[in-house]
Image 1 (cartoon, rainbow, N blue to C red):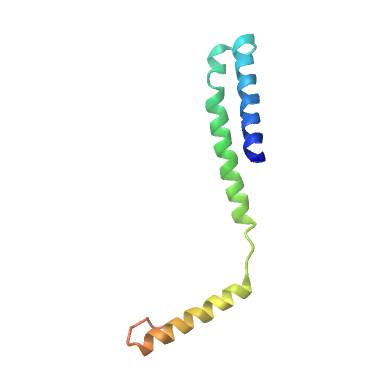
Image 2 (cartoon, rainbow, N blue to C red):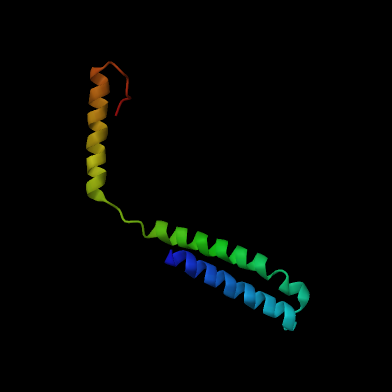
Length: 89
């Protein structure tokens, strides 16, 4: 629930800032109307950046890789005994 309140308060603050810019005419009106689009695009770029950073820092698990290879070998043996061709390796 706290996270929703944070998001909504941030959204209200950004909306108030945008409306303030529209009313004060500090920035030309043609640029001010594009601010929500810039905000959405920058939010998307931030999201992609966070996904990329998360993928780069994804931990490798050598123990799990060994267990997975054992499971694969066990499954291949099981299917060989059942008469299923599972490939050469």
